[in-house]
Image 1 (tube, rainbow, N blue to C red):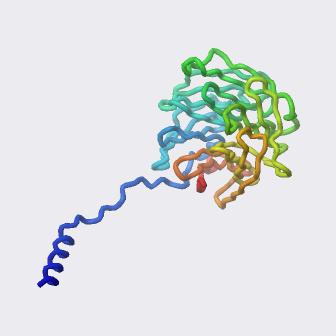
Image 2: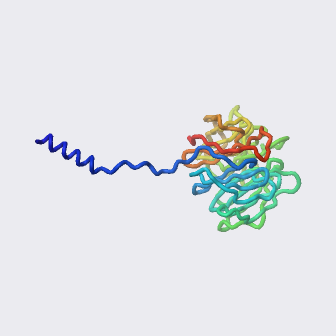
Image 3: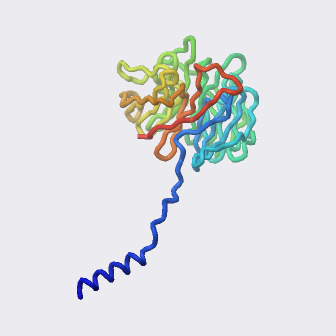
Amino acid sequence: MRVAAFVAGLLAVLVAAPPAVASTAPKYPTTFSLPDGFQPEGIAVDEGRSAYFGSRATGAIFKVDLRSGTGKVINAGPGTPSLGLKVKRNRLFVAGGTGGNARVLDARTGKLLKTYTLATGTSFVNDVVLTRDAAYFTDSTNPFLYKLDLSRWGRLPAEATRIPLTGDLVYTTGINANGISQTPDGKALLVVQSNTGKLFRVDKKTGVTKQVDLGTELLTNGDGLLLEGRRLIVVQNFLNTVTWVELDRRATKGTIERKVTDPGFDVPTTVAAFKDRLYLPNARFTTTPTPTTTYNVVSIKRH
């Protein structure tokens, strides 16, 4: 009788149990396409699930929903490049490359909020970092940083400030100061010099640079930078490599922690993080661009 009662009870539980429901969690694509002929360079990811890509051909901005991998052009561009990008509080900061400018867009609509002329003559405004109270831009041709002071309630300033770079960083032929980030303690900036592979700590106020001690290692072709804690992620574009550098708090010394390559890399330029992935646009610098050349974004594990 006891066995029969147990079996009957078990059957009742099984019959009453609801059917298993498939997980409704979104499946984020690990790679997706950009428009043909787009020639991507920069990437930024906002506080939601949107990614932004800039065209070095036209300056167009392409906004992508990372949940689906689909997107649209939200700004047609000024006809000059959009290179490094950063986004914060629905404002997209854009490094203008050979246009010698910086632009700020409404990240929701793509509306141009303000343009800053940073340099006249030959210039290559390459990348941007946002700190608590400012935006800093690098120029790969001229030894300056350009600063937008955002300290007054985040309002955009009337004009940019130019900070000369002095000290250990010496400009030579080719692409000089490129990717930029903060130091782990937030008190200074980090800049990678692409043509020499050297990494520099930069005083925010004075522009005085000091080479970061990496031992015998170089970050040749260093491009985009991403700081996570004390780890600096460096994209080495033509080497098709992503390198993790473990830094001390003040970023005076660093140790190469690991290097990653991937079959999907085709000269990636920079990197942004979302959930458990790092996303990188393939610039395909070794492929002659045409209106029908294909471009894509790939991702690798974040840790």
